[in-house]
Structure formats: structure tokens, C-alpha cells
Length: 160
Image (tube, rainbow, N blue to C red):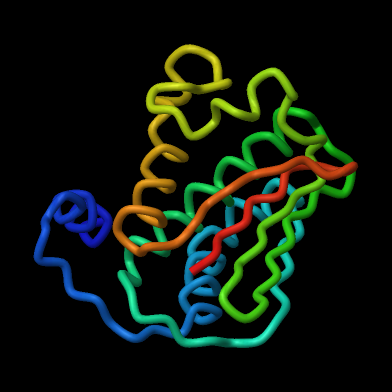
């Protein structure tokens, strides 16, 4: 918890330390942290693909993964999906996170990265998670974060 507080405190610092980190290992550590919540809600999470190194902000990257997985978990629970699942695929410099929660309504998919935009009921979401995630990936790590719908659910793609 104190590490998360430090991460938020350091979020807007200019002199952040970039480091080489293993993207798959960093992703797995987030999954381990969330495993009890996912398991208690019957959500299966799979991670596939090859490990790759990236020179960037490891803790900020992990915050993005945490935000996306938590959002997927919330929607899977809210929609009462049978056999809920989150899949993570690592491919070269891409991380693709998909779920089977039904997708994001077409009329709001273009707004999910806006600050203070939330689909959650009053008091359950701030609308800052995906906004901050996009800032981290695009402004702090020179990457791209996007979302599309598939037949089964949402697909978030991170390109580093």
C-alpha cells in the first residue's frame, strides 16, 4: 500500500527513473496481487506470449495493468458473466488485454479515456483510472493505449 501511495506521489515528477524491466514478469506481479479478488469472483485470468524487456517506468506500467484488470473485473461481476475470463497476450512490444464481459457500449467507447468519465454508479468510480493509464503510456512511456470491442468484450492494446 505504501508503495502505491509513493507511486501516486511521484506520478507528476519530471525526474522519474526509467529502468529495463521484464514486461511479462511485471504483469504477472499485478496478477498475483489481484489473484484473491479474481478467484473469489470466479474470474479466470490467462497470460500468454513471450517475455520482453522494455526501458520505462515499471511501477507506472503496473498501475496501468492494475487499472485495466480492475475495470474488467468490475464489469464481469456487474454483468454476471458465466465463466468470466480475462486474457493477456504479450507479443513483441504489445500487451493485449481482453475480457468476455460484452464490450463497451458504442455510444461511450470513444469517451473512456476522458478525465472524470465513468460508467460506474455514484461513489464507485472517479473516471480517472483509464485517463491516468493513457497519460502514463502515452505521455510518460511514449507508447499508445487504445480500446476496441470484439464479439465477446473489450480489448485494450498497449504498444510500447
